[in-house]
Length: 569
Image 1 (tube, helix red, strand yellow):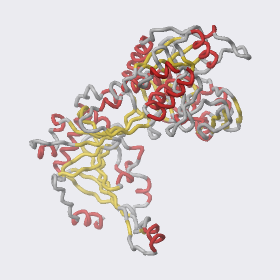
Image 2 (cartoon, rainbow, N blue to C red):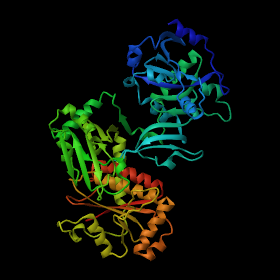
Image 3 (tube, rainbow, N blue to C red):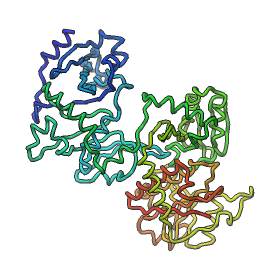
Image 4 (cartoon, helix red, strand yellow):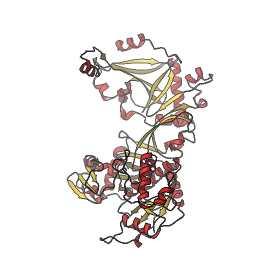
C-alpha cells in the first residue's frame, strides 16, 4: 500500500512543546488472534476505503490501517446560511488510523482519530484499562471517575474530583461498584519503566496522567524501539505489579459485555430459571427501573409482553413469566426486551413512561463457583470479595438500631379488605407514640421535584427520617430496592433549600413545635421493615435488596447521614 506508507513517512509530527519525544496515544489490548480477526468487518469488506500497509516498528512486524471520509459540507453552515444568507464553502473530513502490533504474548492496537472504529469490538480486552488503573494510579489523585452502582437503581454517575480532594469523598471507599473509567495521576514508582518517566521524571512537577477505560490513554514513545519497550512494561504492570489496596474494590464487580463468550450462556440460564426449569442455580425477582424512584408510588401497571396483556395493581413474576412461557428458551430475553411495562399513579397519570420489560427483572445465576447478576438489562460478575463485603455491610446495618422500637405490624387496625396496609400502620404508630409524626404519602412538590417526593413515612422522636415497608417472598427484592433508593432521594432532596423549606412547612401543618425544632435537615435515616412470611435478618434479606442496601448505606454515610435498620415484628 504505497499511498498509505508514503503519507505516513512524509507526514510531519506536530511539535508538542511539553515533550516532542512522546505522544499521548489511545491504546487497546486485543485478544491474541490473527490480525485480520481483530479488524472490524467494514475494514475487511471494503479494503479500498481502508488501505492497509505492512510495517515494522522497533523491529516488530505490524499492520497499519488508515482511512479518510469524503469531503462533506460543515453541518452548522446551514444554520449560518439560514440566519445571514451567506454561503460558507467550508468542507470537513474525518481521518483515522489504527496500528496493530503483536508484542510477545500480547497484541496492542494504537488508534489515532477515530481509528478505534477499525477494531472488532468482540476482540477488545475490556479489562485492560482498569487492570492498569488499579496498579498505577495514585488513589489520592483521581481526577475523574465514571461508575455504575450495583443496585436496582443501576444509575451511572460521572464525577470530576476537585484538586486536593480525595476520591473517597465521592463515596467509593470500600464500595463495590462497576467502574467504567478512571482518570488520574500515575504513581511515579510504578511508572519509572516508561519512556515518559525516564525523560521527564527528574523534573520537580513531574506528572504522568492516565485515562483508563476499555482503552488506556497515555504518553508513549515516538521512537519505535522505545515504544515496544513501553508496551512490554505495560504488559508487566497489568499482570504482575501489585494492585493498590485502596483501589482493589474497583475490581470486585465486572460487567459481562454482549461480546463475551459467557453472555449467551447466561441468557440461556436466565430463561431456564425464569421458566422454572432450573430453580437450583438461579433466582429471579421483580425490580424497579431507576426512573420510578423519584415521584409518586405506582398504583397500577400496564403489561404487554409477547402475546400477554394485563392491567394489574401488583406486578409479579407471574406477569413476566406469562409473556415468555410459550416461547422457546432462546427467544425469552428478546421477548422481554421488546415487551413493555408502564406504571400509573393513583390519579391514572403516567409515572415513568414505557420501559422494556427486561428492566423490571433482576436475576442471579450461579455457574459453578461464579455468581452473576442481571440488573437494568446488563450482566455483572460478582467476585468473592464483593460477596464478603456486602455480607459485612448488611450485618453492620442491621446492628445499627434506633434507640426506640416500633409496634407489631399486625396490631395496627385493618382496612376494609382485612389487611394492614402501610398507611394504616404509619397512622397507628403516630397514634401510639406522640414522638412520631405521620407524613406518609405527603409529597413535597418543588422546582426540583415537580411530580413530588416523599421525604419520609414517619418523622421519628429525634427527627429521624423513617421509611417503612412490608415485604414477603411474594414481593421479592423490588419493594426494598425502592425503599433504600427512596432514602437516598429524600436526603438528596433536603439539600435543596426550596424542598427543605416546604418540608418544614409540611411538618408545621401538623406540629408547630416540631417544625420550630427543625433547624437543619435530619442526620439520621431509619429503614423500618416488616417481613410477613418469616423473621427478617441479614440472612433472609433478598439477594438484590442486599446490594441496594449497601449502595444506600455507603452513599448516605458519605453524606454524614447515620443509617439504621429497624425490624418491625
